[in-house]
Image 1 (tube, helix red, strand yellow):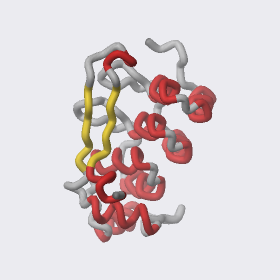
Image 2 (cartoon, rainbow, N blue to C red; image 1 turned 120 degrees about the vertical axis):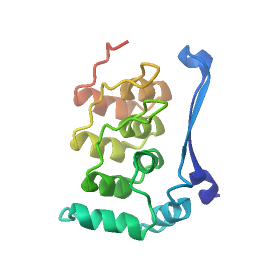
Image 3 (cartoon, rainbow, N blue to C red; image 1 turned 60 degrees about the vertical axis):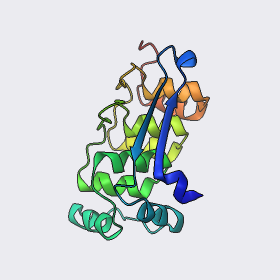
Length: 165
């Protein structure tokens, strides 16, 4: 079941609820090796210390058969794997990289899914809370829409603009 859940990270916004056309975006993590990611998530195999060098982080990802790509980084954030996301950041992944089609960032995905620790990590690493996706939604809008009030509070404390439209 966990393997199947990780095959695709599924982000959907309801057209009526969000006043936009129905859309679905799939970040295909099969390409990066979903089995390796699932194993690392389930077993806690992905870990890194504060002294990890970029080349060591890249080797760790390679040893887990996780492709160093924006899609893989976004999948880590969406599934709540902070250790994996941290490895990508240590390798030099841009914290605010956006999905090509949806414009979703790792911060948006983590906020949408309610992953408080990932939200904190990304903000500590310099993620900008007011980036908008293809439909003009920010991490604050997405998390508020899902009822994640704790994450909304964190985003506001870190300077998210509640008046963006």
